[in-house]
Amino acid sequence: MPSWGQAVKGDEAFADRVLQRVGEPRVVSRDLTVEVIARRVAKAEGVDVEQMRRSGQGRKESEARLITAWLGREVGRISTAKAAKYFGRDTSTIARGLVRLEERMDSDRALRDRVSRLSKQVRP
Image 1 (cartoon, rainbow, N blue to C red):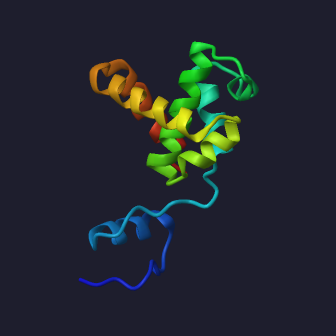
Image 2: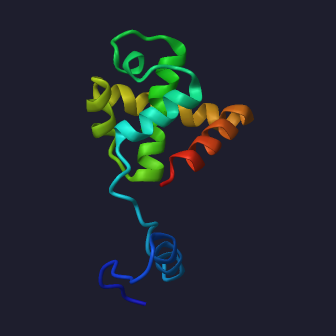
């Protein structure tokens, strides 16, 4: 069935259900930004957003950065380049980190479950 734009009357949850039923992608809230996701991830992971943005490579902060970028891409359709810019990193650095994060999520159920919980917290 052809589609001509995402115009559905109703609240966001209703529009999301209707659009998914006809094969359109999820509705993405315009309020979802890298900064919003970073704050929610930082709170859940017990780190500070400013620490995540610093040039250091602390393990917790680095992982929180990558989780933020992954959630931004998967939940908010935010480009890796935008996440990299927010964190003051090169896009290729974040992209390589995302590949490693996904590999770890494939083999580490605890990490996969943590990211899944965060995904639910991040959704508007």
